[in-house]
Length: 318
Image (tube, rainbow, N blue to C red; front, side):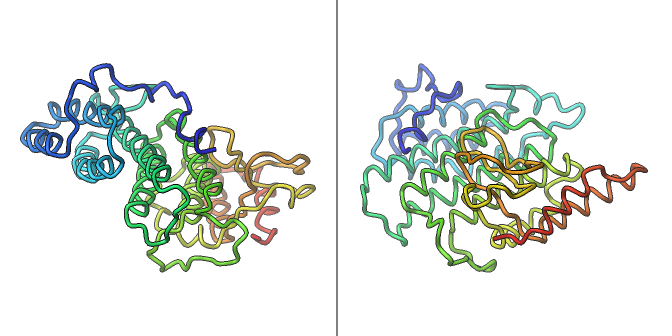
């Protein structure tokens, strides 16, 4: 599974041909980042993208790779915040890169790719020595989930298509963590909503719920309207093996072999699949149902799918 998650042949995963010719020591990158800081966004962005491509291609000690990612994080976030958004008339933001991505999506995608690569390399170096207080590994996990979150929120907020492979890579990451032993799927322990410690299952469910709300409300709202609620919802939501829910109706499937967000399966779940059934918190289902009802009412006709969602809300999440 680790090999599968780390070596999937994506169109955007091939290193740039010129990457190997540039020094990738900590001092060399730091010097280039200082020079980037003096440039305009227009001039600095291509160089920053190239820097991330070089890092992905470079053969480095994993601790050095992580240190370079820590140095690159701030310039990446600053550039992403400065880029114009894909609103009408915003030609710069709509200039596409690989797979039709905007420049901001491309930038975030490169950070996700580098963070995942560093995590897999770090775990290989550590072998079976997992530690709950491993600061470097915790940082990598925190950042990769946060950048996945940035990518998904950007897609929702600016009504873009999901960048190709984004959901597949997120599913791959979580399956990898389960296989690695970083996530105890059968544990009765639940992280409190106010707990600031990283819990990979909570972070994964938070992003699944982000995709679910977007999918079922058909982008009728930006993520700002509910993103602050997602952690509470994710803590109160569960992932259940599909075999346990065969014969049940109106289930939400998380198929980890598909590059897609959670999907509501209307009707009876008749066959198992590779993945989980997502049982959202009642508050999340209530938000979706109410939002769809309000939208349909504003359009002057009732929601034809309201009864299907009512059946979902009637089922306890667990």
